[in-house]
Image 1 (cartoon, rainbow, N blue to C red):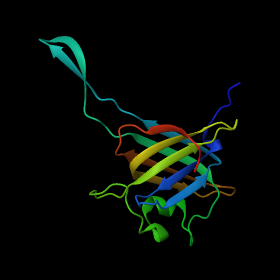
Image 2: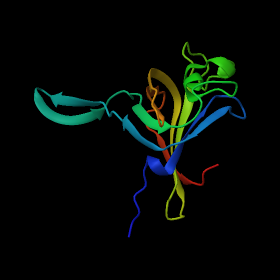
Image 3: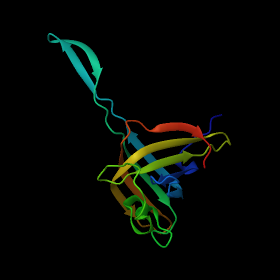
Image 4: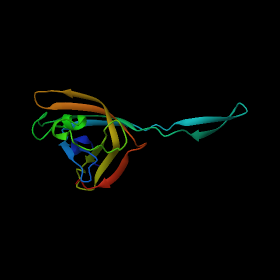
Amino acid sequence: MAVTRNLRDGTVRLADGTGTPVTKEVTLLDGKLEWTVEQPTILVKDRGALDHFRKGDDEPVKGSVAFKYVEHFNGTTGGIYEFLLFLGVFSTNVSTTTGSDRKTINVEFYVDDPGGGTDEKILFSHCAITNIRHQQGDEYDTISFDFMSRAALPTLTKTNHP
């Protein structure tokens, strides 16, 4: 019988562009990950009649993340909020994209196999964080953010969590 894998079995890992990346990893209590891959398509006509499709220009993958977590909002070791905004102890982090006005990070999701098999990794590279929402709670905090990747697709691999 197949065992459902979801973000309750995983972690999110944010990484900067340093040779040995500065990372911030959070074990997820519960969460949601959504992304959209656009495949622009041009309809070509032949003398007014519908003829064929042609591939349009690449578009960036866009996504949204929301998860519950228990950790310090900020502090001497820095929190996820600070990492996303390059603040505090993370103010010297290096962007994953060079020659850009916006600093970017890699957003990685590791979904553990609860059955003990190979884990899954979902990588969104060169992400500009476009929106951040934080909600303070009694038992846990919730953070959500939107991103736009410089890649047209996420990279999906089977791997063991580092």
